[in-house]
Amino acid sequence: MAKLEDQSQAPQKIDELIASIEDWRGERLSQMREWIKEAVPDVTETWKWMGSPVWEKDGIMIVGDAHKDKIKLTFNFGALYEDPHGLFNNGNGNQRRAIDVDESLDLNKEHFIELVRAAAAYNAEKKAAKKTAK
Image (cartoon, rainbow, N blue to C red; front, side):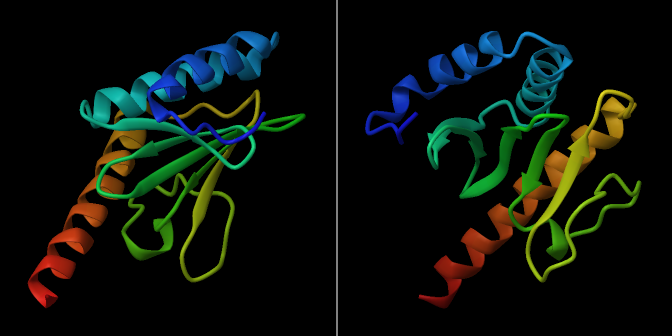
């Protein structure tokens, strides 16, 4: 799947992706999507990089990918804000952190929502700092 030129179709493409995954990964990606939208109601869904759902608010927050044995949720600046409940289980670079969701991972909804809100807050602070610097 190619990058969408008209991002207004992104939610539909994400729906189609979820529907095409016929095992637990489709259900789990759908659940994570709903939690992201609950955490940040005005989040924008986009579709990038040959078929990845992306959630944005003042920039990219989270990229979702379905792999053979997991769902990977990569938080674009996850290394730069707190993860007080230790949800990140992948990534050790200077910027990104991820949650690899396998079939047995039992994520706490409130903790996940808190982390998504931290991502949105980080992006908002970064955007405000750019405006101030100008």
